[in-house]
Structure formats: C-alpha cells, structure tokens
Image (cartoon, rainbow, N blue to C red; front, side, top):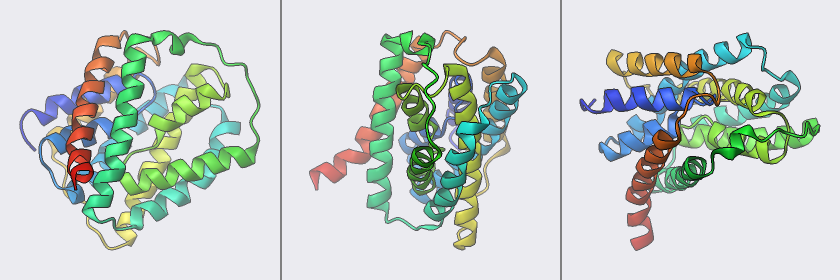
Length: 250
C-alpha cells in the first residue's frame, strides 16, 4: 500500500472505533483515492473491518452496553444477507455506483455530526421495536454490507437513534457486533464464491488494530472528534465524487 495509507488507516480506525464503528467507508474512501481496484478495495475493507470491530465489540460488551434484544434479530437476518452480498460479483460500474452512494451518505452524516454534535447526547426514549422490523432492517443493511464491503453500521447507528431504540452507547454496542458479524459473513461469501482475499500488509492491519484499540478505549461518544469527523466527511465526499462523476457524465 502507498505510504500515506497506513497513517490514514490508523486515524480512520481511531475515529470510527470511538463511536462503535469499524471504518469501512473510510478505508474504501482512501483506497479509492489511492487508485486501488475494486477487487482489492472490497475484501481489504472487510478484513480491516473485522480487526477493528472485534476490538470495539470487546470493549462495548465489557462495559455492559450490549442489547441482545436488538442485536439478535438484526444479526439473524443481516448475516445471511451479507453472505449472499459477499458472494455476488458486481460489475465495476455497479460497484462504483453503490459505493459512491454509500460514501456520499456517510459524508453527509459525518458533516452533520461535525456541525451538530448534539445527536450524541440525545437520550433515546427506549421505544421497543418488534423482531420483524429489526430483521427487515438487518437484512437490508446486511445485503448492502456484503455487496459494497462496508459493515452496515454507518446506516444502522443513525437508524436506531432515529427510531429511539436505545441510548447512544447501547446503539454503539449493537452496531459494533452487527458490523463484525456482517464483515465476517461478507468475507465468507466471497470465499465460497471462489474469490481470493488479497494479502493485506501487516502495517495496514497493525494500524487498524492500533487505531481501533485507542479509539475504543477512549470510549463511545467521549472523544472530541468534531474536527476529525468533519475532515473525514470531506475525504468521503471527494471519494464519492471520484466514483460517481464518470457514471453521471456517461
């Protein structure tokens, strides 16, 4: 990998792990800007996701924030859907279109957090959601996860907060587990489909693990990351434009 990618991966893992995420959209963004091909970007993002999500899951579970009534139906539908998505072989233009939309939405979300950080401290109303709506949400996000190489947390977290399903720290714990399960399923689907996982450099894996450890130890929603989130939003927006511009112009 290009030299600047390793510190970028460390920073992405740190910021995302601090809020229960693993950083796939960030990894995809910087690898896209570096010009790596889709058949390398997709599985590499999932491998790095697994590394960071494992650490984030352990930290949030140890802190006692995991809500099993939320994570079980989400993962039960999301894991097989991610497996199917990971097994599908997308044409480069389709992949770039899907990932471009994912990155654009992620950029808007991060920019919103940077200028309106109050969403982190909003107390959820504890609304109880049924297993069927949760399974439907998990299946949709799981399929998108496998198709694009993201864990799905970038959509799951704001969805659960908007639905007032749980307080923010519990939502972060659920997202971490969901991301880990979906990333593993996506990789499994790719292997079953006969695709190989490109070797990920030890420096990149170490950077992801280090950033994930530091970020998760600082604690969900405690790290002052407004500026970093704003910068991350800019990176995601640039990568999204790079992917979508040729499709829009064609």
